[in-house]
Amino acid sequence: MPTGPPSGALPPPEQRRWNRMPGRPRPHELEEASRAGWVRLAPDNWSTEERARDYGIDLDVEIFRAQEATGLRFGVQVKGTDQVAVPPRVRLRASTWRYWLAQDVPVLLFVWHAKSQTSASRDKITVEIHVPATW
Image (cartoon, rainbow, N blue to C red; front, top):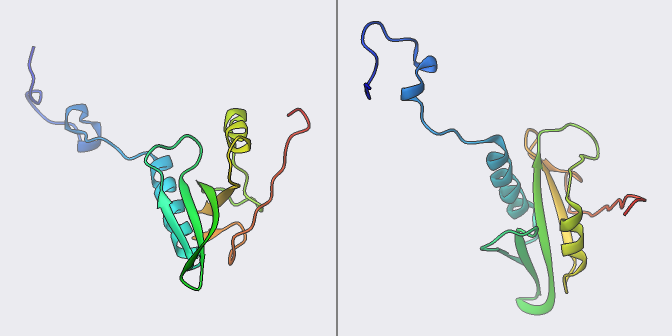
């Protein structure tokens, strides 16, 4: 069985299966953009660290005041979206909610609109939580 390109005329590059490279899925781009958006909007006195493993919380944040630690911490789950709905909607698994509720620190959901390069609140970080009645 031949392993190289077929003999004769070659089809256009987009039709050559043997010539394709791996693609980058849109969810990966959105995740990276939302993390960059968080870093851009978070106050300078918030220290943000990425978690090595993501089980529903992407970032750990510690708040400093006058260059001193306050002991105040919280987790952040970043979500990127291309939706134009206001406020934007994201889906979360029930297991993610249960995981957040089991934490010893609050967890903030940060939604980043990739096309406009803004958070849901545009100029500040806010939280709005809607829990379904069937929870």
